[in-house]
Amino acid sequence: MLTVVLRHSFITLMVLLATIALNFYLYIKVPKGFFPQQDNGRLGGQIIADQSTSFQSMNQILLQMVNIVRADPAVDIVNGFTGGSNSARMFINLKPLNQRKISADLVIARLRPKLNRVPGAMLILQANQDIRVGGRMSAAQYQFTMRGDNLQDLVDYAPRMYEQLRRIPIIADVTSDQQDRGLQSLVTYDRATAARFGISSQLIDNTLYDAFGQRQVSTMFKPMNQYHIIMEAAPAYWQDPAILRDIYVRSPNSQQVPLSAFAKFTPTTAPLAVAHQGLFPAVTISFNLQPGIALGDAVDAIQQVAGKVGLPPTIQTFFAGTAKAYSDSLGSQPILIAAALATVYLVLGMLYESYIHPITILSTLPSAGVGALLALMLTKTDLSVIAIIGIILLIGLVKKNAIIMIDFALAAERLEGKSSRDSIFEACLLRFRPIMMTTFAAMLGAVPLAIGTGTGAELRRPLGITIIGGLIVSQALTLFTTPVVYLYFDRLQHWWTGLHLRRRRPEDPIVTEA
Image (cartoon, rainbow, N blue to C red):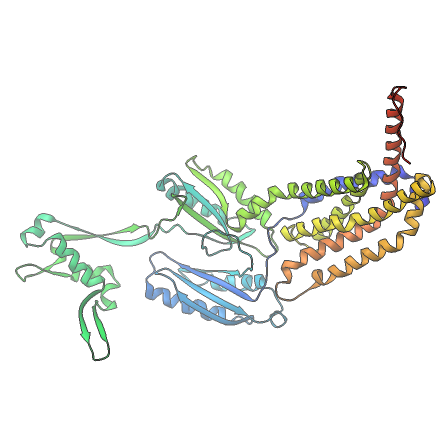
C-alpha cells in the first residue's frame, strides 16, 4: 500500500492540503467556550424580589423557595439567609452523581419552572465552579456591563437592553443590578404652619426617627454586664406608610400636634443603590446559559442584540468576569497556536540544520487538528482553554511520527548512500512498530481523562478528547502523507541546490560535505 501511495503522491499531497483547509472550516464551526461547566455537587443561588419588598416579606419568600428546592429528589442540604430588604442567598448541596443521575445544570433546569411560580421574586441558581474569573458579585454566572457618562442615560436604556436580552432563547436567568424603583414616602411640611406651633425641622426629624428608626434611650447596668436599651416602634406600626397620619409631634409647649396638620405625604420611587465601574455609573446584566449552549454562541447573540438597541455614544458596553476572559482568550488562541508552531520550527531547524525538514515534520499537524476538532464536535464539547491545551500537546505528540521516520531516512541517505525514495520507504517499514507503540501509549494514557466521571472530570475531559481524536486521525494519515512530503521537499532541495550551483562563478570554490 505504501508503494501505491508513493506512485500516486500528487493525490496524497492534495489530501494534505484538504486537511489544512478543513482545519480552518472546523475551527469556525466548532462551538467555543472558556472553561467547561463543572458539576462539583454544589449550587449557589440568589433570590431577587421586587424592590418594594420588606424584610419580613423577604423572609416568607425565602422559606417558600427553600421548601421548593428541598423537595427536589437531587437535593441533599439547603441553607438560606436574607442579605437585604429585597435579596437573599441560598447554598445547596446535591446528592452524589450516582444517586441523582443528572448533572447540576439539568437540576437547575428542572427547578427553574417551579421557582418561577413564586410571585414577586425569582431565584437564580448556578453551579459552583472551581475557576471563576473576576467580575462583580452577581446572581448569574456571566456578566454584561453597561457604563454611562451620566446616570440618566442608564436609567433610560438599561431596561431596554434588559428586556431584549430576556428574549434571547439560548440564555436564561437574566437579571439586572439596577435598583432604581424602591418605594419611599416623601414628607413635605409647611414651614409657616409648623412655625406657628413652634415646631422646627430638627424636631420633625427626631420624631420620625423615633417612630421608624432605632434609638438608644438608656443603659441597664447589671453586676456582670451592661445592656443598652433600644427604643423602636412595634413592627405593626411602621410597615405601612399610612401610619404617618397617626404620628404626633410634641411641640415645645407640650402640645401634641398631628404631623398631618402641617405636612403632606407623597409616595414616590428612589434608587436603592447606584453601582459604579471605573468612577462612572454602571449597570450589570448577568445571565446563565441554557443546558448544552456554548458561551461563544451566547456572546455573539448578545452582541447582535446590543447593536440593534441603538445605544447612545455616552454608553459603553462590554462583558465582565468570565465572559470578558473568554472574549480576550478567543482573540489570543490563533496567536498562541502560531507561536507554538514557530517555536517548534525553530527548534527543529537548529536540530536538523535545515529549513526544509522542519516543514516536513510540521506537515503532520493539520491532520491532528482535524481529528481534535472532529472529536470535539462529535462529543458536543466546546473548544475551551482546556481543549486548546490539548491541541498544543498534540503538536509534541504527533510530530514524533515524522521525526522517527525522517531521522532514519536521513541516516540511510548519508551512511548507506540510498536514494531519498528508498530511504524513506525503508524508514516507513522499520519504524512502523515504534510509531504505533508510542501512539497507542499516548492514546491509552488519555482515555481516563476522556471517560472519567469523578468530581471535576468535566474540567479534564476536553484534554483527553482532543488528544485521542487528534492521534487517531493523524496516525491514519501521517504514515502516508509524511513520505510524500519528504520526497517533494527533497526534490525541491535538489532543485534549489542545482540552481545555486549553476549560478556559481567558475572561480568560486565548491564545498561538499565529507
